[in-house]
Image (cartoon, rainbow, N blue to C red):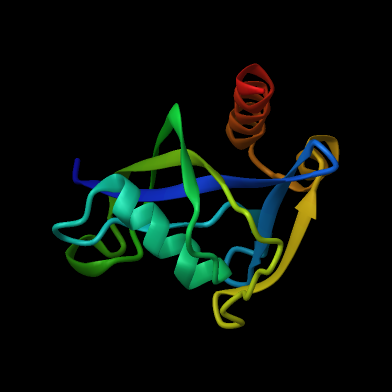
Amino acid sequence: MEKEFSAGAIIFRKEEGKPLFLLIYSRKNRMWVFPKGHIESGESEKEAAAREIMEEAGISGIRFVDGFREENVYNTVSNRGPNKGSIIEKHAIFFLCESKTADVKVDMQEMVDHKWLVMDEAMKLIKFDVWKQMLARANLSIIMKD
């Protein structure tokens, strides 16, 4: 089975000492997601994550939190290149990143809205249990580092 790799991040910023998490609304998938996208040839996972954050949310200058890397592996139908239409093994890699800005500029093509939310509110909008578990681990990482 062919494999495809994507990278993204759970992005947070602090407001009054509490973490707020960024969710963006995907027009194509019709759900709230973390910024994520295909790793391009020659890119590292973190380079791809930073590029996708810039492309989908307009945020640069993010800080990667040391020691947080989650990998979600699942089978799906590819929508890219030579594997298009075939079942592939997808590896979605997520980092935890801190943003110093609340300013978000969604691209309005793929992503059409955004929200900064406390963890409990973000949990209500996230569709996949595995992403909810990642968010809970991200929140714990932030608490443990404070």
